[in-house]
Image (cartoon, rainbow over all chains, first blue to last red; front, side, top):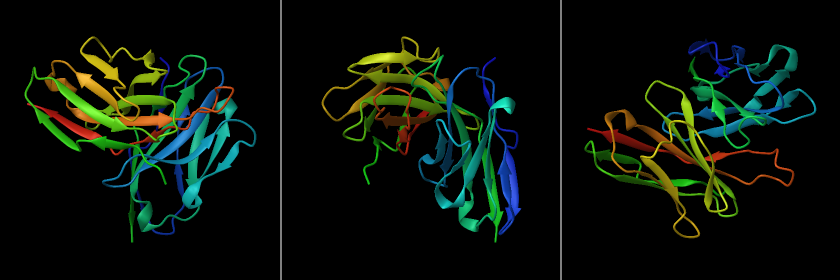
Length: 115
Length: 117
């Protein structure tokens, strides 16, 4: 079945540790890729997006993600996390050949950064 | 910065009752969406709306659901006869696809938590 998978449901890190959250999708064809973040009590906000071009994309707050087409992956990274990065992170795919408008979300990863 | 807004933030209703969830999308956006997130589960697409009609819907969006843009600013989701399993957070989103149609950054509202008793 076509889906978006996030491998880690909960991640706990200390401040200054490096972060990598995995995301894999199973859609063929052209896709747009997104990472959204939801801080406690707030709404979903876009961290970064990939449509085409350079597979390494940079987003807000020091986050970046790399699209590896051969691995159907779009992993999120940050070299040094802060306490304020505590949030839930969602990978999302816009499968252009099966659903032009919809976003298909992964299950989310809860990140807790301890000070 | 313009935002998508949603009202109410919380809605409690009895099973079988009708509910209407309201959203005000970003003013120059053309596409509107509803998603839901059952507690502990992933965010799921319900429906997209463009040019005053549904352009895409998921299998979740059955005859109990309907959407409407009653005026130039509001976008509503109606559940005709709520069931216990409709309890979820409902998110509205809007987007402004560029010419060519392949750009689709969606901006989300804060959500309405619906509890069906």
